[in-house]
Length: 143
Picture 1 (cartoon, helix red, strand yellow):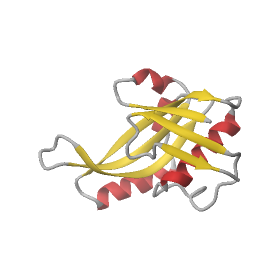
Picture 2: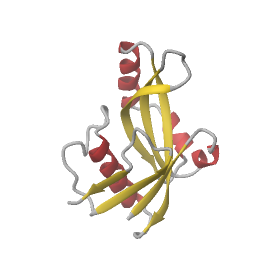
Picture 3: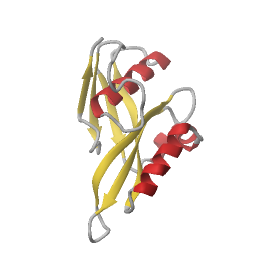
Picture 4: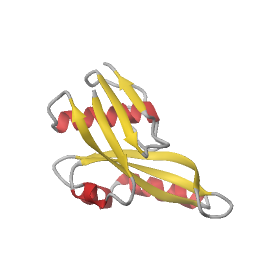
């Protein structure tokens, strides 16, 4: 079992270590106060570098996300981050890839191309704690 803790912007310490991130497109309510209609656009991971470095790096998904935001007025980007807080397996690059693939398979983000249709990694169960909406609380996958 893998346990991820999804954290809000107040926990900036997590940005300087390895972990996972979800980029959302979110629309605010009529008052402009609360985020509603959140759509998971991309799920990624940083292993061997910080989340801050990975999230700020230019990549193909950035262009696709920008296009979504341009085509959907009122939506703004929101980034959620998470860190592995418990693992029965050794924490290595392979585990991070399997966790990302499992999260993609369970949550079906719009701009992840791999893992949406099939999962081929190790048997895995991810339990998200903290403020994880709209990411699924539990993601389970088996090869």
